[in-house]
Length: 253
Ligand code: C5P
Image (tube, rainbow, N blue to C red; front, side, top):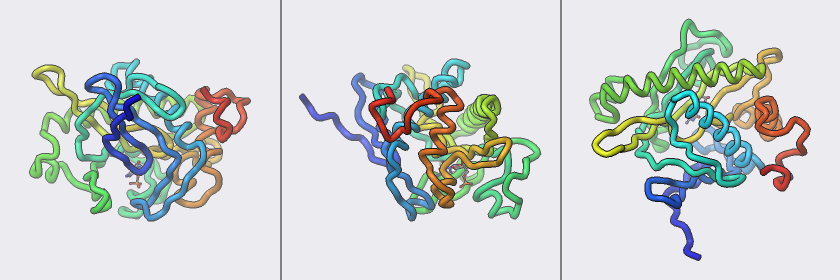
């Protein structure tokens, strides 16, 4: 049997060539990194949970007409996706102040923002993904004016969807990051949501207790990351409420 071709290995995922032209396979690793990979660990079961959770969110988005790269989950750690050209921006949507926004602007974490605020960072690990303005994006040609309108619309639709889904299970969507991919249909090109949406890329706080259920648990040493992600998965019904811990992989299909 021919060995499949690896296209790219990132911090939390490996991308392989897909079975059909124009597709890729996204493999979710257990590796956790923070602070531009200065902090690293392997968290058993994280990849399985993120594969499942990203499937759940991307499927929901596809169903409400927000286009994503997700085609189908293949197994516990892999999903088949459309191949895209990644726009070199990290698109962050914030509903409450936290993280770098709180640090940068001196706003207490948890302060509700007057409206969702969208920020753009250049995707460049060697520079630490710096915050950039639309002026930079236009001047350096990272995305066109039309792209930026489409990206803003996608980001806000994802925010509405994710906020609602989370609110329904008692979780506050504080902020999140998405990546955008460009696909070509004949002479036309359009932008779709790519990469992953998971507790690695969102801030999720329990509405009642404020307990953090996202990657800040790892960044700030607040306990078990697997327990936090499992809690999100259980509340969403992505995993049966009674299932044994994720570290027993045979129970998750
Ligand atoms: O670190 P910061 O506060 O700017 O992060 C905002 C949101 O974007 C958080 O939910 C964080 O998990 C996510 N993010 C990400 N990948 C990055 C930077 C931020 O998923 N490289």
